[in-house]
Image 1: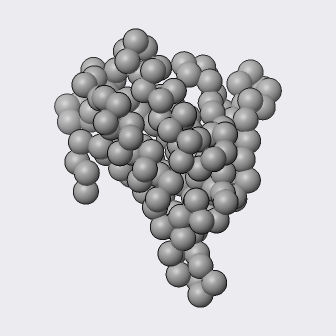
Image 2: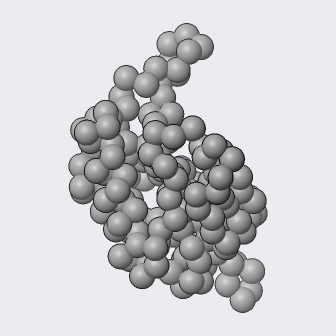
Length: 150
């Protein structure tokens, strides 16, 4: 699984012009599920998501997690994170998991983040043509791949 985490002051998802979810201060997470991903990837990434110390403390140092700040989390599925651009100019999505794997793992990630934070995880609509607007705070943007674990 690959995720992109952005520290935000606001994020919202709309589908067909209607808002389906929104958050204030917190994390906007794009989630890409690949073939071969498992519940172990979900667990590792959810723990990383809520534990990352990317919020400023009283001294202005990035030293606090979303758990410590009480921030919100939004997770949106995004199969394009699995793109391979090695050959040519048209991305290949052959590594992307099909719905039978991607939906349960995306759902499991959202559920686990909710359990860890004690708050609902705002979500996008799986497979929908979504419009996402956000204000990236910092900007702080971090890419994490559960297969690299770096």
